[in-house]
Image 1: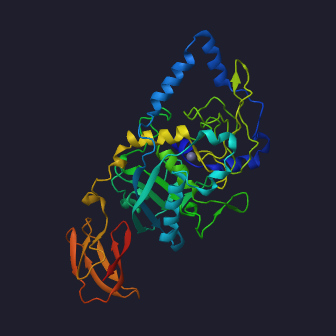
Image 2: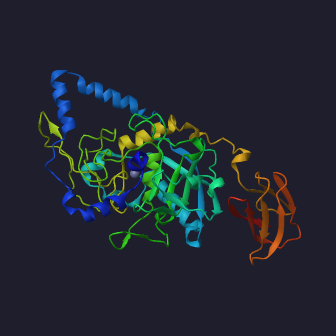
Image 3: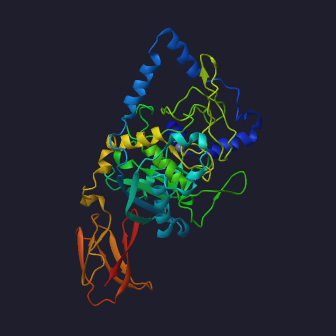
Length: 433
Ligand SMILES: [Zn+2]
């Protein structure tokens, strides 16, 4: 459960609890003195230089980037694992999601103008660009459920009806599926890299091939025909920022309130996200856009700080409404770049070749004129090819890694290749020229 609490969107749990226990629901509380800062001030009085030592420790842990301004390129593989047609999102929705990621990670989002002016000085630009390398589509009968035993990582394993990751050292893998949860809505989750000082040890993926981001299909893009129902009525207004938030976790960011309040209420101004420039925040926003939220008041010398900032509800790492979010801070941007230059440096190695066993079904050349090669390393499966009218043109059981096929007398157009193994079905297309 720890990973769920830290890294996942658990709005459903929280909201259903509070709807039953409204008296426990304390938000926008302006009377809370920041106990952590108070202790820090006392220590500074006793031991001059204490604050600077803390600052140095933070700076070291951030691995601040020395390459500011240079755009870091990250290759992305999107796996769509579907058990019904609506989950099998069209390419247009996935392309739209990539555009949203690239806008938000380069501060080119049109709604960046909505940031309150007091926060303009701390708005950061991560300068990270995501390239869509492939969309893997896998039909399945498996379900992907959040349970007491953990996260639905079976979506990442073809042996369990999911889709195997491409080499997670060199690719950001994003799995799109329907996330089942009897606890409430889980929009998505991600594992941070190992070894970050702002995360508890053991927060990373259980094994490298399970690293990446999982998103519910209803959260993808701003042009998604599917809605995500709100348990309190209506639908969540999701505009593609669940992916922005989860990729933030994947690149080492914590929730802006530091996860101190717990999911069952209470505020904690002592918990911190490890960023100096995010205002101290005692509790998450509630998918709203409440600019009056100020859950912690900083102290100076034991007195309330007259320069105390309100909660930064525009931040991607809060739980404010997705239409309310529009920024990362300078330190968050630097922290993510630092992660790319250290813990996740393999992602920047764009010359890395895709190793054979990581491809589940390769088709080349594509488009093809006369010979098409079907690369399918999992011997024992069946390859079928259909035309646009659904007519079966070719079928064979896979006996070697590469199946050569002469299509020289086929009509020009698009053909659909289905690769079926005991665990999954992969659908791809190729063009006959
Ligand atoms: Zn989160």
